[in-house]
Amino acid sequence: MTAGEAPVALVVFTRDLRVLDNPALVAAARGGRVVCAFVRDAAIVRGRPFDARRDAFLTECLSDLDAALGRLGTRLVVRAGEWVDEVVHLAAEAGARAVHLSDDVTPYARRRFARLEAAAGTRLEIRRHPGLSVVPPGAVLPAGGDHYHVFTPYHRRWLAAPRRPVLAAPRLRDGGGDLPGLPVPPGPRPAGIDHGGERAARARLDAWLRDALPDYARRRDALERPGGARLSAALHFGCLSPLAVVEAAARRPGADGFVRQLCWRDFYLQVLSARPDAAWDDYVARPGAPRRDPGVLAAWREGRTGVPIVDAAMRQLTAEGLVPNRARMVVASYLTKTLGQDWRCGARHFLDHLLDADLAVNNLNWQWTAGHGTGSHPKRVLSPTRQARRFDPGGDYVRRHVPELAALDASVIHEPWRLGAAALARLGYPLAQDGLMAVQP
Image (tube, rainbow, N blue to C red):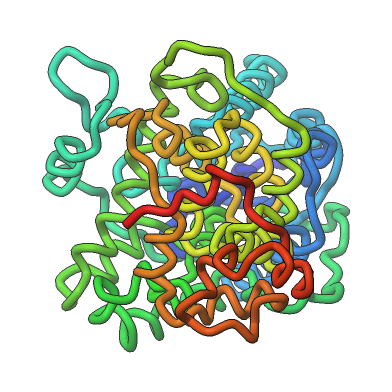
């Protein structure tokens, strides 16, 4: 940096792929010139399948972010490799004095921050900022505790907690010059997924708030035409600020139930922040060793259990990377309570296939369903048959995802075992094992 030049700050985007209400970006812009970057972390790619849907969504997010930064006065530099090494090298190339990032609570993110701070030493200042949640983890605490164990009292405190203002996108002074970066290719889009990026997510949010929010409480658990906003992937990748979403929904008719769901997301983030071991260890230990039966797990993963609502959800997961929340609860309860399998097997499968694969929300919801999580009720079981009759009364959700049963009438589609083994064999559909149909009046 020559005399008289403004200092350079490096912003490394992670799960905050947006320009609206991005505290890390705003803080960096206050200091002078800015270099904006994203590093495709080789360890994440090695660690688990990064399927075509998720990669296409991420690529669209990066392309949209690059365009948004261009309108603000700079561009996005994309690198790939070992994340800490790439960030440190990029800071050195840019002559940056500080690195700004959005804070995160997952065990992997914490280890990555620690490695970055160690590598930076005294040469480079590492600054972490809020933005992942509405209320930062740790900002709302019970008397004498480091986190809330039960949702309801957390929800009351969360509603009353002070919040920072939603931040406008800042004007940026480019500090990157001709720094080399990887191109962001458009690439083919897998069918059926929403467009990635802040602009598309904000358009979906605006349309949903206008047209569907008033009916959210009635439609949210419907399976064939669910009333949800389909924003979970945009929130996971940070295309939308959860705070900005809450503020946009506030005081509108029907907002309370929707805002409550965003509070659940914050609740699980504050649990994981205080108990990082709960990512994969039981939050509440129960006696007995977990079971992992390869044949049972394979049938569940492949959607051939013989229980239509379960098989429909599992096939949708594989085909689309999306599953309605109610269906997630049903298949999780069936795997853990009816089939008696380890919740970790289900959680891992979901993380491998969901477009919105969020560790805190996914794994702590799995534990809640399995009876090992916050507010656990170990005897709580969701009957697939009862749930199907209530939330897919006409059988349309099952027909869409289990074509073998498409010709069945609504009176039998959720209990095809009543037709007998021979009829099911002709349909090419398995007979549910005795005792595993979970039929309840």
